[in-house]
Length: 495
Image (cartoon, rainbow, N blue to C red; front, top):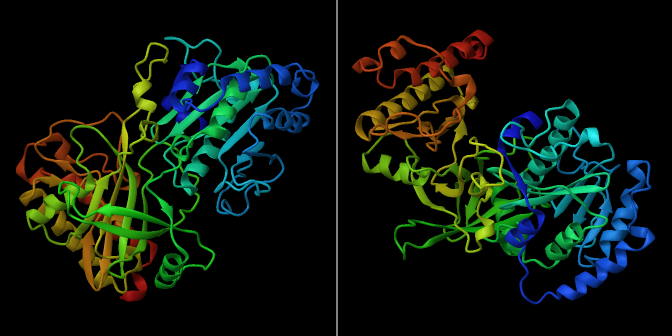
């Protein structure tokens, strides 16, 4: 993941500005109290880690020194305890050196509860960030060891963001006697300049502020709240979930453009940890229970690309329905989640062009978007017969054609995973990459789509203005999928 994330790193931000911006003093913190604590601690033996030769010998002394500033939090040495509860499907261990918890009861590594994770490296060669970046010197070290370190800390951040309802998280990278603070969100990461944490108060100041910050500033998605015991039990039963599954509550307006349109109250399960790249839409879909109507519906939560010519998916569904496009599900509620606390919204791109930031044009703005569909379909790959498979693909192609001809919308992500079957009828879903035909040219610099279904070359690319070519390269890969199933023998038993 190190090489994948390097184009989405913004830095280096002055550490004082970082703390003031993302963890501002609420006004009731006694600055003199912190100053006296740091002066006392930095002069004591317990705060002196410089003489420690082995990295693993530094964990506990570090915990002892920093715990003084954050009695509200619990620092745990997790260097030998991988998360075996949430990350069992991973091909690598999620095992930060130190994890920080707010509940005071956690033991070992539990990425679903961790507040801040810390990674130690005791060799300068493993530093992932360059000391003095500039126009001709990237912020990320181009050494193998540097990329290894970046891959590790990115993996931990991605796992934490995937299994918690968070808007952002913080982590700390320590290279012997220097530290760097990092803020992660779905656009990338903002890093601070490296500083001597034993003689400068910045790291202790960060923990001091973090311990006293509101949940919103810490990164908790405050639009998601714990479900009541009754709501949780009712939903687990309806969805046939494990009795130990943690359940949450979220509300989505039926129509964000209408003030009194009403809200759907939905009970959702805790997300599952995934080892995917950190930056991007991070689409999460799941069936859930509409409490008021006692109906199981489909919920989608994703960080959509938030640029001028990209429609929110909920609006695209409404546009398709207004043009009577067939084989498209009904979106019964949707909205962009804009938090009242500015720091909860994505921040990375806002600092891309600051004077202290290294040149970086890859970062793309993202906004949290939620929608609810009225059906929960079966996967296309769960077809009951070859006839149903072919009919379903045909139905998706009809929807694709109707959207193109009637609504002037191109789906742009026609793939197996975006076709579902519900009570024998097929539906084309996932319109978040759809494009209005009136928009000319690319809308973003990064490539989007389902890679195995991106058509690389066709005669239509040579003659794009011919009527018979309009939209055609987008549908041909789906036909290849049916051929592929036949080659693999998956259709054989249905003949």
